[in-house]
Length: 447
Length: 68
Image (cartoon, rainbow over all chains, first blue to last red; front, side, top):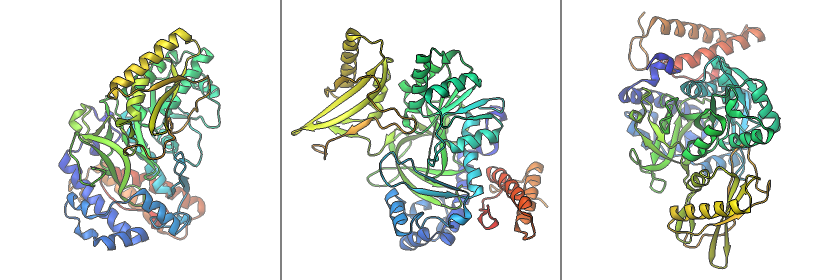
């Protein structure tokens, strides 16, 4: 591979031993910083009997306690509004962001210094460059630009690498479709769900996106960017390649990206993070090829040091050699697979929303869908509610519903899914994180 | 004076140049006689160089005490 393949050829092509040595060096500095400045870590390190001087090898990372979202939230309650993790207050920061709030919980509040914010854009540059975005590109960012951190870092990353950037905030979907075409965008950034919605709107407007100048879509915010059926549908509708990325407010930016070789997974930016994969129940590490929970340690953010944060993201790590791009960075096969607590138990059968979406996306006439779980007496009921394209008549709908029910049952040990047609516009649309699973049961039977 | 990166490798000429510029920007930021416009510009420069020297495994440090 030529050096032009990589944003940072020096570290992206390091071998495993060198990467580990670099991570150990950065981990020591991070822990020293946290121990000296963060009230939260001063307490947690003391309680764990940990001292940064104990870090002799990367395995010593496991001496450190893991941090949970619940602990972070409790810390915010103990010392509002930012909690005890930050090493400085708002006077040291230039940005204040929050988590998206889509779960209905109190959001996590984060502060960033000028350096932190620049680092966040830098992480996006690894991913954007890796997927083939270059200074000659015109990028359209289909994002609301609010207090949710979302694509803010991508915006600055695009500017940093020299692309022409079009902020697509405060627009209707129709307005965004028209701007994408009128401005000659070659790259579009959005969630996977919103990429589909833009494509539906374009069809309604008679705009052929596949004939537009868009060559690449940068997807983020939902696991669907790596669900093969969803990705294939997006790529077909746009006539462009779709690259998955994933990040989180807790680190402020992305930590994984799909390179232009599209290996069916996302590279971990390993010179800036340590990513562990653990058994969600025991906390013990799992090996390559085994699904587990992501635990992230981030070297970049100064105001909020992040050491062994349990993300609740479900992933399967595979070696860097799985991709032929030449990077030394390992991958998450299939990106973020979902949340550790995503799985639904319905009449003794495990149902994963990601698997359902994979099946639903094989039916291109599905415009939107919702998975609805209810309980009648002691009987759990699972329904797939579908908005079909307007041209789907009664006969075609009956065939489609039968096909969906059959495919879903076959993938779920014969579990019967009731497939119902929803009225046009009845189901919610999403610009940020889609919430298509609605569970109206109390405790699942046997759960 | 020869230097090494965080992996113990000798630094290149370009890396030495970046490190020197970074050190000079930090030294500038540490002064207390900068006009606001000069401080803001020096901060942007220091942050930009921090990213470069950090990416290239030349340093691993925070800039909070310098206002960045």
